Image (cartoon, rainbow, N blue to C red; front, side, top):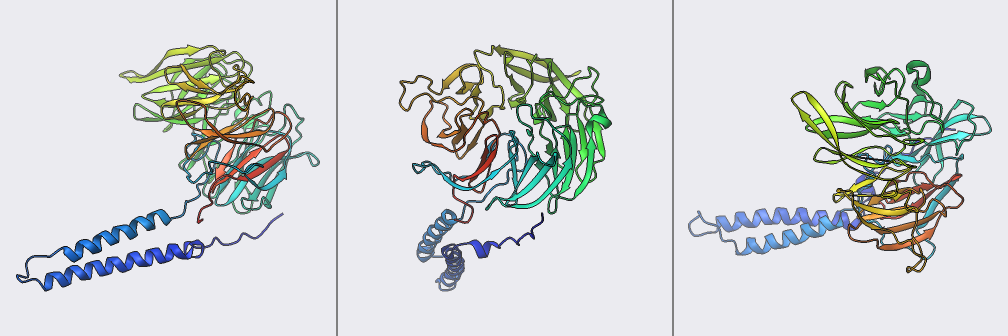
Length: 481
């Protein structure tokens, strides 16, 4: 179904009257200030000196008005165009998040049914892009929705039969300048026109790269990098970079060990001045050159059952890796020498000390934040030395009871964490503190089980989901208000 897109209003149309008046007053003082200086100069006894008494008064008034104007500038809504946001760090740069909620929780703007799964949303230009599945027609379904209303703008589907296995959908679309990239559960890679949903190009990674479909279907999320879109195919190549516009292969990484595609996603990093992509296979962490796909370095890391969280760069050449079940975590030091890159393990943690099963940790203020799957789902602040700084309370006698999150998703914005309890659907808001767990608000939003999908945030609107519904919440000030 197609809907005609509405033209976006101009800044002048959406700006409140007092914003316009503020800048008109600033313009007036700039002109008056300049004229006053000329008058004082021309009226001076020598014609060579300035008297600044009047000028100083006008200058102070000018800065007062300037300060008011700066404070009156509305918050700007940032896009969330791919998995973990524009910088792939799961942090929104938006401000103005609400630090308290009404008794019933933040306002629900819309709620829509979706097929069973965990696939999160991508947001760009006031539109929401979701990988869905039509269980009646047995077709992979890409949907473009209005961020304001949740109504479909367009849909595109592709016939493929998928039997539920811990849900059906897992991947988040990646939205470029003109195309949206969708990776379906059986490893077909689709590029669609961002405005209409019309297919532009497609890759069948099983046929073209001998990729193996993971046991729980594809869970990897495409990475946008300049004019390229990248995906770790496994099979004939480890990683492949495609031209976004045409789908033409730009480069591929060798895969001598014939590593299979994992559920982890590629993560960008710059180490020793070299741009590279980090990837976790089932048995090692890898650094791939962004310029030509060369394997720069590898180091062993043995996962158990599935590799889901992605490796992340934490600064100074260090790379942190974690995985679920009994895999634990490890920190690596990556260095560039005369003969190339090398990696050595700095420390490792058992799964009981810390691991994350479903979500990649967030790096914030030189600490790592995530839900520890082997610590009863406690939200954890971990120092870069591997020592636990704090964990959310688990004691039922603690004020408000235990604060556990199962495998729920989380996101950071404006110094605040939004985190979902994957068992109950309770959304919690707490400070992004390196000192303690300090909760500010909570609300029952979702229901059911396995509430494990990633979140997305844009224009003060948080999109979350459970197995069968997607919900949009107003958690911050919208742009222009």
